[in-house]
Image (cartoon, rainbow, N blue to C red; front, side):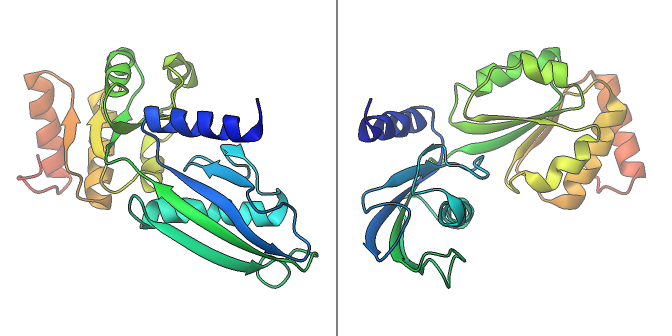
Length: 229
């Protein structure tokens, strides 16, 4: 399979699975550069030091472009394009002195962000259902074995941490929040931290009427406003 075929196959997979991505293309080059015009790559938000697919030459230029593409996914809207001309020596810190022009094209789907705290039996049923919808799902738990039982999917990010509240800064501010942890004590901590950190569009907690009454009482004692609980 040639590079162009693989590129468009990967692009179609991202579109089908409703994953936001940025196409990065070298459109012009002068002097010495790691790749020729036409070289391209796909970047998604989970990329760290390497692209999802393709390459524009690796090294500092590619890392710079990945970071910029991820920034665009956060700050810009769908169908936005941007061109950037870079001197590889002065702008990127490479030894070669060429100049390249990069073209960024953002592809975004209008979807919900949903954070599911807990990866137990309820989450094992809930998360696969959410993956059939147009949403990005984050599942957070302190039990890696339960997280590993969830399906691998491009729109599911499994987050392991002993303290579930620590991950809140990593989550989009517009996340719908669902708490299905092992007990109400954990739910109380999560809800308190969520409300202190943001104004979420929705908070849901699983439990009986008696559990709900206890949760409300404890949250009010912690200073949350009555309209929140």
